[in-house]
Image (cartoon, rainbow, N blue to C red; front, side):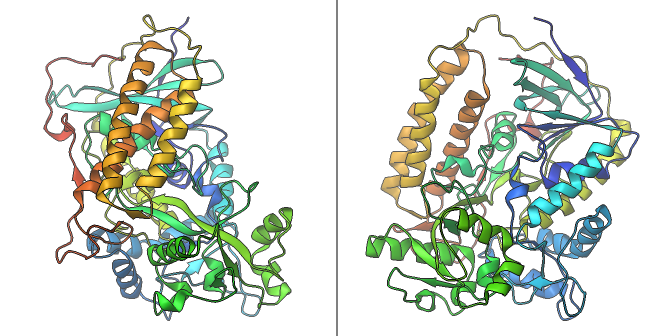
Length: 545
């Protein structure tokens, strides 16, 4: 089989808001490759409904947005990262508007309509009805497809990063990645001066999630194997309200409904959130998710209900057309009856440790968006700060790459991917079985409420699964399902390890064994044995398998 080598200035792994924004902000003279695991629009960005938090109203302020974020983050937000993000929020929104993103305007004033979500003290969520992610993604995709310096690769799945020695320092640097071309069923080599991980989060590690199938923690796992630190992986945000219906796969009911007055109710119709938080339905997401989980377990209920039927049908159709249409597909008329909901894994607050320019521990490797740990979210991400982080850090990382890329030596050609000792698999049932087992025990043992015993059980199971996966990976040709399973097992171990190390309850991590919050807030920093910032090698490149 012919070996395929690609050479670019910059390789972007991921085609959501973070990856596409960075590609567009890079200078036009740089050659850029953007990899998408599926279709270009298949990432998590498209599924974001609520909007983007930004200081846009004269009654609002940077200080207020910063204070709200710090409060929601449970003492673990890095204030410098929060301030950096919020101070650049208006500029990020103006850039999206210039791209042609059609944000909703108020009928009476013609100004952009701002809504309010959990944890926010002001209306500061700019949105495009209830399909903001789709509007943002569409705007980015239009521009990316028109850019002559950007090459798009759909149905390409990154397998592992390539490391070589820097000619000047002999310190390891990232020089690209090995990537599976799904259509051609072959692994191809992408060489570049700068590599950007923008591959999203890892919520598919859980059985129930609002995320698309591609959210398998690929960037986090690849960076960990390459020697990068990860942090705060125990803080997995469970969105309080995912549509509960046997045919409704991963459909999120946006927090904006609660921002516009929707009420959470028990099966009896009783409202209950006032028993858990003074802000009731507008409490931070971790509080709302735990409250729903508690009431479901107390009552033995399969779901609870979110009711906005007290609003006029005209209001609902105007503000939430996507949700109304989807619910009607399942026989639920939200203008006259409540929506059945359950919590579901939604967002990975931890990730690859980076600075405000997206630099990771490995030279020339950047991480942005949900795959990164910037310090913005702390122990609990505040609603609608995620898309903002994507845009702000994409711009910052692009500026850093533009400033430094002229000084980066061209990588030497990496070794070909070696498949000489592997065969085609005739036992793919092993992959599907392990995938299902992993996601089930993560849901049962490492979910919204945790105990030491549950975490120990999960740790035991993940180590056994990793042995099976490693044996399978070593003997058979890679496939997209195998790549994702391998990465999910790594991420699951990182989540479990982080959760076992936190002897307190804080934000999204709630332990029955340690229900109190410690006086001092400390990040859960995991350091791999091959920590890239300390590793110096004599020869390069490293072996491929």
